[in-house]
Length: 504
Ligand code: ARG
Ligand code: ZN
Image (cartoon, protein in one colour):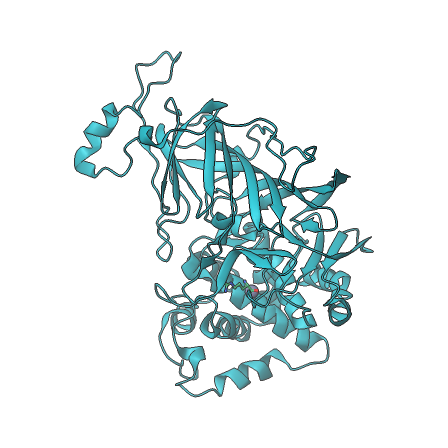
């Protein structure tokens, strides 16, 4: 969906680190605040559609040969069954340029985000997803635009209709103390303050707690980050560190993630970190940032990164990203790790199994992303099965023995609480039926088709959907195509049928 506009023109806007007063330097050029009272009508019902066409927000594009164009507002969501307001309609994003200044002492952020986007319809207004924070100005194509906050929707009405196919830049200036989002399972998601900075993990919804976005994995984009923190702190993002400069007691870190990335995989984790950098024998640059309180415990697992990269490459195909690494924080309030793209984020010193899990996600989840959150097993079942495979191939429990252990759990156990590929609205999508039963599904597939075909299916899945998205139906179809077998009953039982499956 976003693939046709990845080369949309970028404009780079700066948070200038030259200010000598305070920790939060002003944006290089200030954007005047748009008066809210001018915000265009947005959520009118279908019966009022005709009125929308003549509403003041609908302005014909000047200078076009055609008659006046009356666009329509983009949808506030993309129809994800679990998160209906996630993502937005009417445009796709090719690039995010995120400028942030963060002061761990006050927890205040100042943000300046420029999104390079492309309209996919004649667009009179469109939404970005942003929760909390105060928006101080919005421009579209360099011109001040009206904006309005409606819950997690930032509704933007440009001065003129954006024609279908047109590239445009939207810039949002904002500030405030970011507040994490609370997930259906009660977990904290997004910008999570720590005792020395912030643990920034946005799955599934939390990206909107720190930058405005089209917050659904279907709309992947490249990212530039420019994060300014007080000297002594480190800001770690995805991809490659391109510069690090300290002036007047503030350090600005610039990072580039050039491969497409889903918004939930973006991070700008801030803390007091020990940094380790090297290039693996296979040529992948590694950047690790580790909370010194965790470093002794983290060292054995982090030392395995090059080996895990090579192992994943052998098993799943080429490593999808141009750098790797880890961020090991101390974040008891988060209580989970996340496969932030190219550089997974750990809430504490991880063990080898967790590092294998998060690195396997680089292929399954990050490069090949889900389309709807209902299909989360395509991420978690695969990453969990990668842990089983690592164990099996490194002198540990065989995958079959693991399967048998789980299968021995009684029908009342939580692992059978819902079908793997149909958790249900409001369910905990990070629960055992997705992770462990998800891995069991892959083991059942492997048992049915044999090792050679199974591993070929995994590689083909990673290759055919590289940097894109996939669905459960596509995975089922691929498995049948490559095995020449009718796998309908197997997948029906293991993915979609409630309760503990009977022995096949
Ligand atoms: N994808 C992460 C992992 O399995 C888990 C993220 C959990 N997120 C949450 N909001 N509870 O490594
Ligand atoms: Zn996972």
